[in-house]
Length: 375
Image 1: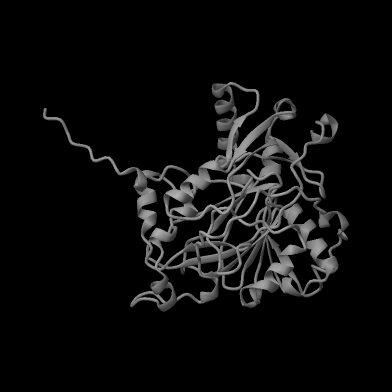
Image 2 (image 1 turned 60 degrees about the horizontal axis):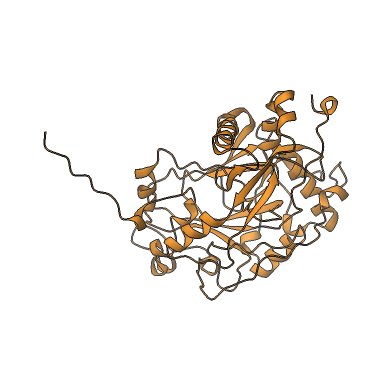
C-alpha cells in the first residue's frame, strides 16, 4: 500500500492550549463587521464595549495588597439585598440561584456586603433585569471596586481606555470555533479565573450585551462540595499540599494569536485546599487551565492525583449548575470556591459579547484539617 500523505497544520494554526477566549483574538476580529453588522447579523449593541488590543499597555508586576472581605461584615438575614419584592429561586440545592426584583447598582454598602456573603454561600447568582450594561463604564467599575482591587488581565481584550474590563467576545460570523472543534471533542474547559496571580479574584461580575438566541450558556461547579464529596481520609491527605499555577502558557497563547501581554506572566504556589474567609468553607483550588503540578511530587504522582481531581470536578453534575443568559443579566460568582466553563455550542454566526469586572481577593490560605467539623 502506498504511503498516505498527512497534512500537518502550521504551528501558528494549532490550538495548543485550553485558552478558548484567545482563539478568537485580533486575527479573527473585524471592527467593521462589529460596528456596522452584515446582511444577516446586526451590529454590536454596545460599540463602546467592543474589544481592543493595545500593545502600548504595559504594567509592572502586581504588588501585594491587604484585602478586606466584605462578606464577613454582612447581616446574614440579607435585609438590604433580599427585600419583600425580591424573587429568589435556587437552581440546585448546592449551587446557583436566580434573583430578580433588586437593582445591584443601587445597593447600599450594607447591601453589597450581603451580596458578597450570599454569593459565597450560593457560589453563583444570576441577577435579572440589571442596568449594568447601560451604566457609564467608570460607574460599573466603581461598583465592582468595592469588592477588591481591580485586576487588569495581562492578555485579554478590553474596551478602549478601560483595561480593567475583561471582555468575552465572539464576533458576528466568527467561525473560528470550527477550528477549535476540529482538534477537540468538546469546548468545555473548566477553570477558575487567573489563579496564577498571588491574589486571585474573589467576588466576580459578568454582564451580557449580545448573545445567540440559544446556546452560549455558562457552566459552574461548586468546588467546596467537590471537596466535601471526598472521603475524610482523602481530604486529610490533601491538606498541606501546594500546587503551582502558571500564567506563562496563557501569555504565549495570546502572543501566538497577535494579542497583547500587558504584564509579564508569573507562577504562584497555592494550597490544594483553600478556606473561604467569610464562610469558613474549604474548597478544592485547582483547575486544568492554570494548575501545573503539585509541589514535592514526582511528575507521574502529580499528574495522577490532579487527573483524579479534575475528573471528579468535571463528572460532578450533581454539584454543578448551568446559567442561561438573558438580556439585562449580571452573573456574580465567587472565584475562590467555584470553577466555570463557557459552552461554545452555537454555529450560526451570532455574536456573544460580555464584560467581566474582576476584583482581586486575599492570597489563598489553608486552615488545618479538623475531622469532627468536616465529617
